[in-house]
Length: 418
Image (cartoon, rainbow, N blue to C red; front, side):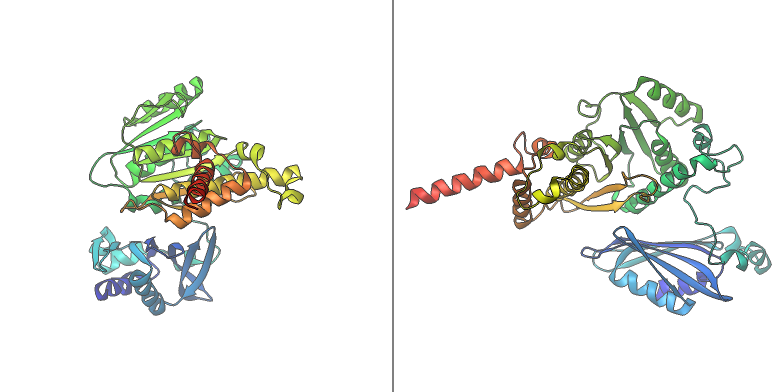
């Protein structure tokens, strides 16, 4: 840890661009921390933006305290650190046994004479508190597919009417950035985007992983609309994206892969999300990123005497059904050996379909505890929930039906023993 602290003392100045702490240890509620320099009343500080669930918490620390805080969090909270600065890059990884590996890669400014480093420095005025948000795909740097899809101008300026789409794309890429440690690095990765539509995110993921991160990825976008698939295929060929392909077909019937590393599904309608999640589980996908839409199935099923005074209001019943559906889906993924979170994808003001289910497969493959599974079954029985994902994962028998069957068998056995 002393080596890391020494490097932090070297890089924590006005030339720092960004530090990201990620890969939280088991049992921690922190998702990641982003650290940037800023000026407050003319004094250099480092802003810690800590993400817990759907919320972000901010704290500003002077350089010495910032170094100590980062070292403390890499000891107790996180397993990965990535530092980007004018003078170079630093990566730190902590093993399960607590051993830390630190690597430094100096940039051109770091190897140059002091005068060159001085010329490369970011102006301190750019560290003002109200500076623009930094995006993974930056405004002002033209990205070909964003230009053709009408999000950017050829000069890299964001089209005003498409700014929400630009923010949505970058927000999704932040989720992708977070799960990179869970993906294999020693072979080609296969990613499936079910219901890709116009494929803003499909192109963004490919561009980010291949062009920005240098990973070997093959991405397949699947959608029912022939004209959409044709247009996306033409764009992919135009950019020379030889490992980005688009196919026409439905989620439930797709059988084109035997191994998939990551499954993405954005706004797949109603039970189409269930089929996508089921496919991901059966493939043993390391990562699932799903933004569900139009959860009608439970709305037709849900019944509960205690909640009847609330469920009689159609609007509330619809919203509760949507939230409960996604909660149950997350629970089912937990039972299948995934660490699952429900996060806010984009601000509610931009779209009400703003919940993202993020599931990362446990390395030990351990499934949910029996007590957790029993509590889940009690919940589905109380709500009369019989979801498609439950049926698919249980070969046609939902957890609620399984629970009732087991309870009946237990009661019969108890009666026979008397």
